[in-house]
Image (cartoon, rainbow, N blue to C red; front, side):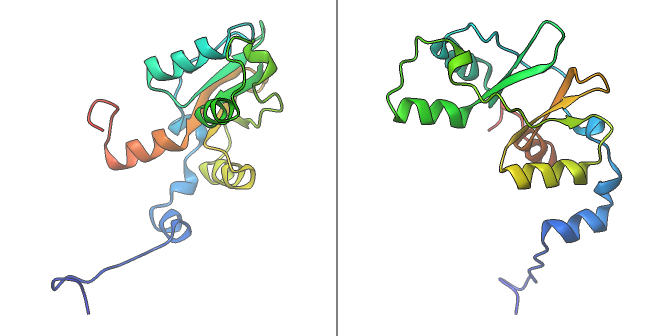
Length: 153
């Protein structure tokens, strides 16, 4: 029996992906291209302020060749504040340095597997030369799915 005369249909993500054939999409079709980057010499406090001011969930640190050398997320910020870590130290001291990345020509299903396997919310996207070209964000994907923007939520 449905709720208020309506039937409820609950499907899982695997079934949805099969149904709408999202698996055929490539990462480059779904990524954000205006990735906010941060210098490893910035302080942790400056980086957290950037996350707040730009309403973003992470910053990627790149070298002179645009290769990912680190990532700092809102989860990292919460962890550091909770552990009372000095915020005036360089980002380089606290950012994640073994960055999980994905190629821009990978499928969305490959990206989904990487996100689930590594339990991450932000996946930097690289080209064939290993240079940062975009970011796949779980929040961005959900916002797109539900038609939300930072202005209305």
